[in-house]
Length: 179
Image 1: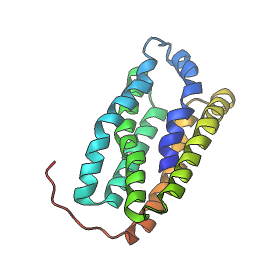
Image 2: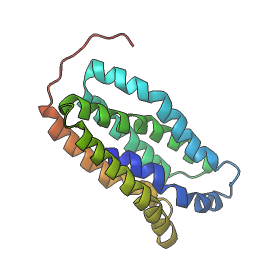
Image 3: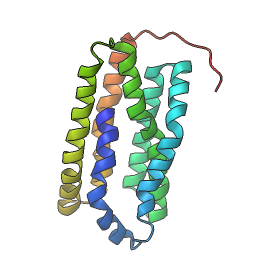
């Protein structure tokens, strides 16, 4: 899930000029990134509170699912406006991916071991920061820009399966909260 969220933020950068030319709309190109960031930032605290109420596994799977629906909508977008709206939907899921991954680590790993896991998180971000633009450029140059969104499906499905299996073993204690 962490790779999914981190990779998506970097893979799109090299494809933006091609996307702008494809839709003949370079003026609104910045909204492709901004829509994702706005919705992702807005829902991140909600994921935290809702995961306290309903459990981390359920909310992580919801976040991944929303992100994948947004990815498919992005890949199939017929216009720049549709792509911007689809990126907003993708951000609604993406806002939970990184925050919930870190929260889950905090729940299941002792404070003494957290530094090690922060190293893993840093490695995921470093890999995404280097590999994302390269992969995005390669897919855009040698295939089609929509593949930068289709590539999220196998990664996201793997994340769904792993989260469903592994997070079932994490004890869940419901807490009463007001939203």
